[in-house]
Length: 256
Image (cartoon, rainbow, N blue to C red):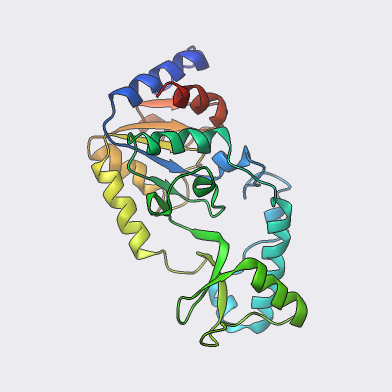
Protein backbone atom coordinates (compact mmCIF):
# COMPACT_ATOMS: atom_id res chain seq x y z
CA UNK A 1 0.00 0.00 0.00
CA UNK A 2 0.99 3.65 -0.12
CA UNK A 3 4.01 4.87 1.84
CA UNK A 4 3.17 8.36 3.11
CA UNK A 5 6.76 9.42 2.44
CA UNK A 6 6.60 8.57 -1.26
CA UNK A 7 5.93 11.41 -3.66
CA UNK A 8 3.10 11.41 -6.16
CA UNK A 9 5.69 11.01 -8.93
CA UNK A 10 7.12 7.90 -7.27
CA UNK A 11 3.68 6.41 -6.83
CA UNK A 12 2.84 7.19 -10.45
CA UNK A 13 6.04 5.43 -11.48
CA UNK A 14 4.98 2.37 -9.50
CA UNK A 15 1.56 2.42 -11.16
CA UNK A 16 3.13 2.82 -14.61
CA UNK A 17 5.24 -0.27 -13.96
CA UNK A 18 2.18 -2.26 -12.88
CA UNK A 19 0.29 -1.25 -16.02
CA UNK A 20 3.26 -2.16 -18.21
CA UNK A 21 3.42 -5.60 -16.59
CA UNK A 22 -0.34 -6.17 -16.68
CA UNK A 23 -1.92 -8.22 -19.44
CA UNK A 24 -5.56 -7.48 -18.57
CA UNK A 25 -6.06 -4.21 -16.75
CA UNK A 26 -9.59 -3.50 -15.54
CA UNK A 27 -10.66 -0.15 -14.12
CA UNK A 28 -13.59 0.35 -11.76
CA UNK A 29 -14.65 4.00 -11.63
CA UNK A 30 -16.75 6.03 -9.24
CA UNK A 31 -17.88 9.63 -8.96
CA UNK A 32 -14.36 10.96 -8.39
CA UNK A 33 -13.33 10.55 -12.02
CA UNK A 34 -16.29 12.67 -13.12
CA UNK A 35 -16.04 15.42 -10.49
CA UNK A 36 -12.95 16.51 -12.44
CA UNK A 37 -15.36 16.99 -15.38
CA UNK A 38 -17.70 19.14 -13.28
CA UNK A 39 -20.23 16.44 -12.44
CA UNK A 40 -21.18 16.74 -8.74
CA UNK A 41 -20.93 13.71 -6.48
CA UNK A 42 -23.40 12.66 -3.79
CA UNK A 43 -21.29 13.07 -0.68
CA UNK A 44 -19.68 16.50 -0.94
CA UNK A 45 -21.37 18.96 1.46
CA UNK A 46 -23.72 21.25 -0.43
CA UNK A 47 -23.97 18.87 -3.39
CA UNK A 48 -26.96 19.69 -5.63
CA UNK A 49 -27.89 16.02 -5.37
CA UNK A 50 -29.04 16.76 -1.82
CA UNK A 51 -31.73 19.07 -3.16
CA UNK A 52 -32.52 16.75 -6.08
CA UNK A 53 -32.30 13.30 -4.52
CA UNK A 54 -33.32 10.44 -6.79
CA UNK A 55 -36.72 9.06 -5.82
CA UNK A 56 -37.01 5.48 -4.58
CA UNK A 57 -38.11 3.08 -7.31
CA UNK A 58 -41.09 1.79 -5.35
CA UNK A 59 -42.42 5.29 -4.87
CA UNK A 60 -41.72 6.09 -8.53
CA UNK A 61 -43.73 3.08 -9.68
CA UNK A 62 -46.65 3.78 -7.35
CA UNK A 63 -47.25 7.46 -7.96
CA UNK A 64 -47.73 9.68 -11.00
CA UNK A 65 -46.81 12.63 -8.78
CA UNK A 66 -43.54 10.94 -7.79
CA UNK A 67 -42.71 10.24 -11.44
CA UNK A 68 -43.28 13.87 -12.36
CA UNK A 69 -41.11 15.05 -9.48
CA UNK A 70 -38.40 12.59 -10.49
CA UNK A 71 -38.33 14.05 -13.99
CA UNK A 72 -38.21 17.61 -12.63
CA UNK A 73 -35.20 16.69 -10.47
CA UNK A 74 -33.59 14.79 -13.34
CA UNK A 75 -33.75 17.76 -15.69
CA UNK A 76 -32.49 20.17 -13.00
CA UNK A 77 -29.43 17.98 -12.49
CA UNK A 78 -28.91 17.59 -16.23
CA UNK A 79 -28.83 21.36 -16.57
CA UNK A 80 -26.24 21.68 -13.79
CA UNK A 81 -23.65 19.54 -15.57
CA UNK A 82 -24.79 19.91 -19.18
CA UNK A 83 -21.35 21.13 -20.24
CA UNK A 84 -19.42 18.23 -18.72
CA UNK A 85 -16.74 16.73 -20.94
CA UNK A 86 -14.46 13.73 -20.40
CA UNK A 87 -11.66 14.39 -17.93
CA UNK A 88 -8.01 13.49 -18.31
CA UNK A 89 -8.80 10.34 -16.33
CA UNK A 90 -11.56 9.33 -18.75
CA UNK A 91 -9.25 9.89 -21.72
CA UNK A 92 -6.44 7.94 -20.07
CA UNK A 93 -8.66 4.90 -19.58
CA UNK A 94 -9.98 5.22 -23.13
CA UNK A 95 -6.40 5.00 -24.36
CA UNK A 96 -5.76 1.83 -22.36
CA UNK A 97 -8.87 0.26 -23.92
CA UNK A 98 -7.98 1.43 -27.43
CA UNK A 99 -4.48 -0.03 -27.15
CA UNK A 100 -5.80 -3.40 -26.02
CA UNK A 101 -4.31 -3.14 -22.56
CA UNK A 102 -7.78 -3.08 -20.96
CA UNK A 103 -10.71 -5.30 -21.98
CA UNK A 104 -13.28 -2.95 -20.44
CA UNK A 105 -14.30 -0.47 -17.78
CA UNK A 106 -16.69 -1.10 -14.89
CA UNK A 107 -18.38 2.08 -13.69
CA UNK A 108 -20.78 3.23 -11.01
CA UNK A 109 -21.33 6.46 -12.94
CA UNK A 110 -24.37 7.28 -15.06
CA UNK A 111 -23.01 10.24 -17.04
CA UNK A 112 -21.83 8.49 -20.23
CA UNK A 113 -18.44 10.21 -20.09
CA UNK A 114 -16.48 7.01 -20.67
CA UNK A 115 -18.30 6.59 -23.98
CA UNK A 116 -17.81 10.28 -24.75
CA UNK A 117 -14.06 9.72 -24.26
CA UNK A 118 -14.15 7.12 -27.02
CA UNK A 119 -14.69 3.80 -25.24
CA UNK A 120 -17.17 1.63 -27.19
CA UNK A 121 -20.51 0.98 -25.49
CA UNK A 122 -19.84 -2.73 -25.28
CA UNK A 123 -16.67 -2.13 -23.26
CA UNK A 124 -18.35 0.03 -20.60
CA UNK A 125 -20.19 -1.95 -17.93
CA UNK A 126 -22.63 0.44 -16.25
CA UNK A 127 -23.66 -0.95 -12.87
CA UNK A 128 -26.06 1.90 -12.14
CA UNK A 129 -27.37 2.44 -15.65
CA UNK A 130 -27.08 5.47 -17.88
CA UNK A 131 -28.67 8.87 -17.37
CA UNK A 132 -28.17 10.15 -20.92
CA UNK A 133 -31.32 8.50 -22.29
CA UNK A 134 -34.58 6.90 -21.11
CA UNK A 135 -36.26 3.55 -21.66
CA UNK A 136 -39.75 2.12 -21.54
CA UNK A 137 -40.12 -0.24 -18.60
CA UNK A 138 -42.61 -2.35 -20.55
CA UNK A 139 -41.13 -2.86 -24.02
CA UNK A 140 -37.58 -1.57 -23.53
CA UNK A 141 -37.75 1.01 -26.32
CA UNK A 142 -35.09 3.73 -26.00
CA UNK A 143 -36.34 7.32 -25.74
CA UNK A 144 -34.08 10.33 -26.23
CA UNK A 145 -34.12 12.81 -23.36
CA UNK A 146 -34.72 15.82 -25.60
CA UNK A 147 -37.99 14.26 -26.79
CA UNK A 148 -38.98 13.22 -23.26
CA UNK A 149 -38.29 16.68 -21.89
CA UNK A 150 -40.19 18.41 -24.66
CA UNK A 151 -43.27 16.27 -24.03
CA UNK A 152 -43.01 16.58 -20.23
CA UNK A 153 -42.70 20.36 -20.27
CA UNK A 154 -45.56 20.65 -22.75
CA UNK A 155 -48.02 18.49 -20.81
CA UNK A 156 -46.74 18.42 -17.22
CA UNK A 157 -47.42 14.68 -17.22
CA UNK A 158 -44.96 11.84 -16.74
CA UNK A 159 -43.96 10.54 -20.18
CA UNK A 160 -45.28 7.29 -21.60
CA UNK A 161 -43.93 5.11 -24.38
CA UNK A 162 -44.87 6.13 -27.92
CA UNK A 163 -44.86 2.47 -28.96
CA UNK A 164 -46.74 0.66 -26.19
CA UNK A 165 -47.94 3.28 -23.68
CA UNK A 166 -45.73 1.94 -20.88
CA UNK A 167 -44.00 4.06 -18.27
CA UNK A 168 -40.80 5.75 -19.42
CA UNK A 169 -37.93 6.14 -16.97
CA UNK A 170 -34.40 7.45 -17.10
CA UNK A 171 -32.17 4.46 -17.91
CA UNK A 172 -30.54 4.62 -14.49
CA UNK A 173 -30.85 2.12 -11.66
CA UNK A 174 -32.82 3.88 -8.92
CA UNK A 175 -32.63 3.24 -5.19
CA UNK A 176 -34.81 0.21 -4.56
CA UNK A 177 -34.49 -1.06 -8.13
CA UNK A 178 -32.82 -4.40 -8.81
CA UNK A 179 -29.23 -4.27 -9.99
CA UNK A 180 -28.88 -5.19 -13.68
CA UNK A 181 -28.05 -8.91 -13.82
CA UNK A 182 -26.22 -8.78 -17.14
CA UNK A 183 -23.98 -5.86 -16.13
CA UNK A 184 -23.21 -7.44 -12.77
CA UNK A 185 -22.35 -10.72 -14.49
CA UNK A 186 -20.05 -9.03 -16.99
CA UNK A 187 -18.35 -7.06 -14.22
CA UNK A 188 -17.73 -10.26 -12.29
CA UNK A 189 -16.20 -11.86 -15.38
CA UNK A 190 -13.83 -8.93 -15.88
CA UNK A 191 -12.85 -8.86 -12.21
CA UNK A 192 -12.04 -12.57 -12.24
CA UNK A 193 -10.11 -12.42 -15.53
CA UNK A 194 -7.88 -9.40 -14.83
CA UNK A 195 -4.39 -9.35 -13.38
CA UNK A 196 -4.50 -5.66 -12.41
CA UNK A 197 -7.60 -3.98 -10.99
CA UNK A 198 -7.71 -0.18 -10.71
CA UNK A 199 -10.33 1.27 -8.34
CA UNK A 200 -10.55 4.93 -9.32
CA UNK A 201 -12.49 7.73 -7.67
CA UNK A 202 -14.76 5.49 -5.61
CA UNK A 203 -15.34 5.59 -1.87
CA UNK A 204 -15.84 1.79 -2.12
CA UNK A 205 -18.77 1.80 0.29
CA UNK A 206 -21.69 1.09 -2.09
CA UNK A 207 -22.28 -2.66 -2.34
CA UNK A 208 -22.56 -4.97 -4.15
CA UNK A 209 -20.56 -2.91 -6.66
CA UNK A 210 -17.70 -2.24 -4.25
CA UNK A 211 -17.19 -5.98 -3.88
CA UNK A 212 -15.49 -6.26 -7.28
CA UNK A 213 -12.07 -4.96 -6.11
CA UNK A 214 -12.13 -7.57 -3.35
CA UNK A 215 -13.14 -10.28 -5.82
CA UNK A 216 -10.28 -9.39 -8.17
CA UNK A 217 -7.69 -9.23 -5.40
CA UNK A 218 -8.73 -12.54 -3.88
CA UNK A 219 -8.49 -14.11 -7.33
CA UNK A 220 -4.85 -13.11 -7.64
CA UNK A 221 -4.98 -9.68 -9.29
CA UNK A 222 -3.01 -6.75 -7.96
CA UNK A 223 -5.24 -3.99 -6.61
CA UNK A 224 -4.57 -0.26 -6.96
CA UNK A 225 -6.79 2.37 -5.35
CA UNK A 226 -6.65 5.94 -6.65
CA UNK A 227 -8.85 8.29 -4.65
CA UNK A 228 -8.58 11.65 -2.92
CA UNK A 229 -9.66 10.22 0.41
CA UNK A 230 -8.91 7.02 2.28
CA UNK A 231 -11.15 3.99 1.78
CA UNK A 232 -11.87 0.96 3.92
CA UNK A 233 -10.01 -1.21 1.40
CA UNK A 234 -6.72 0.71 1.46
CA UNK A 235 -5.01 -1.83 3.71
CA UNK A 236 -6.10 -4.57 1.30
CA UNK A 237 -4.54 -2.91 -1.78
CA UNK A 238 -1.10 -3.36 -3.30
CA UNK A 239 -0.83 0.36 -4.04
CA UNK A 240 -2.84 3.35 -2.81
CA UNK A 241 -2.49 6.77 -4.41
CA UNK A 242 -4.23 9.70 -2.72
CA UNK A 243 -4.30 12.39 -5.38
CA UNK A 244 -6.13 13.98 -8.27
CA UNK A 245 -7.06 11.33 -10.81
CA UNK A 246 -6.07 13.43 -13.81
CA UNK A 247 -2.65 14.13 -12.31
CA UNK A 248 -2.08 10.43 -11.69
CA UNK A 249 -3.47 8.90 -14.89
CA UNK A 250 -2.76 11.57 -17.48
CA UNK A 251 1.02 11.14 -17.68
CA UNK A 252 0.70 7.36 -17.41
CA UNK A 253 -1.60 7.05 -20.39
CA UNK A 254 0.67 9.25 -22.48
CA UNK A 255 3.44 6.66 -22.16
CA UNK A 256 1.42 3.66 -23.37
